[in-house]
Image (tube, rainbow, N blue to C red):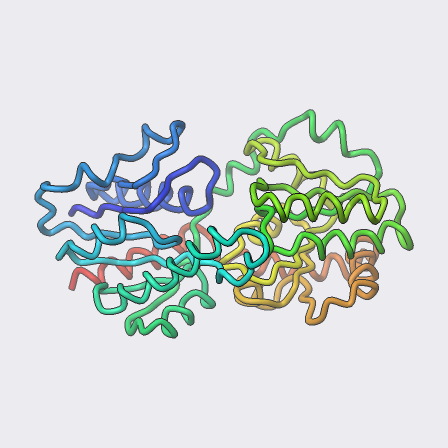
Length: 353
């Protein structure tokens, strides 16, 4: 059977791209012919995908198409034009309102993407969210046949070769607070900084904060830098993009994952933190309560002094910390690869009927 995947962009280190590659490996292991097609293929990923334009004119009869929807793209019109059986996997699009005052162009692109999604409501045989939150959004957009397929992760890459330089530099007795994710307004890194400021000033001076992820929205980057300077904070590290080895090392040295994001479609770092046995303290919004599902500790209101105290409890109170880590290990089983492979197989069989 031919089961091909399409997506707007394939880049190294991107959660959606990694998910696409993992699905391809699974499909090929099952004996299916499976190729990845994309609109924008970054240079270091050209060995793994082909331009979707090469599909034009090809005989795709009997092929099932899996379309990863995460942003408005010219590839959407192409997918809509095909009569093949289709599975759409929705990875969420951040509402443009989060970008108001920061980048009007990106705001408009996001809003157009969410509107574009509606046009697929009657064109797909099955539509999957990678979280229950995303599945519910699909229902709100008018999709009738929906399900959930979480992002499939390669946990082994976190256990292989953590960067020794990161470990030797930062495993020094300081308490290391971590947030992983792009520097974008919906992830509210300024709120992470505010909570860390109170924690460092009033509870644990020997602490540092790592904000791991790319920036690129100029006004937001400038605001974060100005906020750090205003608070006269020491030991806040904005790492930019990191390698897989560096990321594994940051997880190894971390004492706590702190997330204040107000919009997440899935949040791969929550799963990574569970795997690394780092307690999670996260704001209760969008996909986060579904991804954690009783694991970690949820924040219902952004009372920064109370958040700082909870940070200290999760780091220093051993019985409490171990209780939370147990809850996270129990939840991690839901994302185990064999289970998710069976979920994927069931959905494909459903579409083939």
